[in-house]
Image: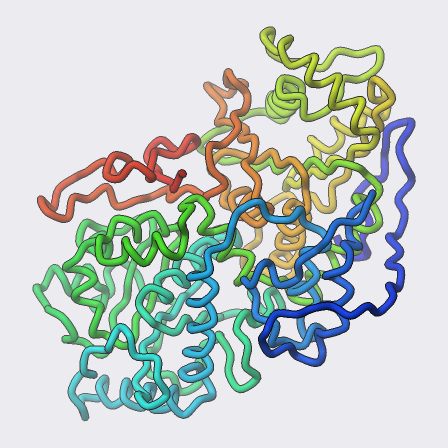
Length: 556
């Protein structure tokens, strides 16, 4: 992706040549701002962004850099170009933001400035943890769930530590942050290696602190090696019958291999046990937000935060995850050079899994069948797009869409370059019907996932960002990469369903019922009987995922 050029530059016969988007200076006009502090470094940008959207082709649209109050204006724009500029490239959100969520985010930001690394309260908390672990002091007293005042220096923390690929990491971080909001804990992220450096901007205002855990001198050692067998895990503590506030710290294991006692984190007795523990370390490869909705004690607050329960990741993702200037540069250079000229951008994300094998030819047939059946791409001159026999009822809709849209850009995101080659050849050799121009682009085709490498992760994040700029998104079933992209875009994706015996399923794709990610490994645990339970039938707004039979997701 570096340099903003596609891996190959083949277009349809009528394609528009790549151009560089020119940002035109706008006149300074008095703009009314929210009655809150605005960093001097971001004032000029906010004026320009409020007046017009400069990132999309066609008529300018009014952009909202603060996303309806979701973002705090207290940052210098130069430190993180993506924070206030993403609204120039994405479609305006159609999902209402609750005033209570805005209020709680501002409250959390104050808490983070009070208790985050670099503050006296943090130093005090680390010292107390060290003393407790050394046996020189009793365990900390239970924390007050409502204590955020500077008169009470006692702070509680949850430390997130990475596991699996970038999509899993983003989804589990958002889940941990929601838990921090609900319990008045400070979220700290553990970066044990170089793979996450220069990836994201600091999400919380305040130059005196950070959300990155300082490892030097921190008393809990070996965080990277914590696992389901760790003695200090919540599950093992519950198994030993240890009660509330009996440990200076606990490890919460919510990975795919978690045991029944670990799953009691989503039960009242599990929450009672962690309530008085000031330091929690969390490892998860899951979007466990739906599990928090199982807990009655948080039900009222969650309803106030998210009146529409199917927008949790959409709002939290846009709040937390601002690409670093390095990643933002990759994404915006590519967008401006290749995607901006089109009236419509179609993102196609393809992920292969060893447990659901399908040949490249069959997968390509599935993509084309989905695109034709659902009128996502136009037919081609002098050729027939492979599709299912029952798609004729979509032809009238397809013709109307072709008349409205003259240029389409198709962004293919995959580790494999075959799908780009086949799609671009199709439209290069035949051209779009009814005068529709289709240009196909693929930023990278890295061959294999390398989550331990920083540059690989930066390119992957840039591709997630580019997908979130799409007007239509096609994603792969069970892909956390796809979940993040659709959530940031605020779009219900067309999901390429898993193959059946290595062949294209029928239907080849489905329109998702929600923009929410799937909790792919929910506890399926009955807290009362301590036996198995179907979490998809507990509450009406949590249902079985369409692409993961054993998973659950939030719906409206």
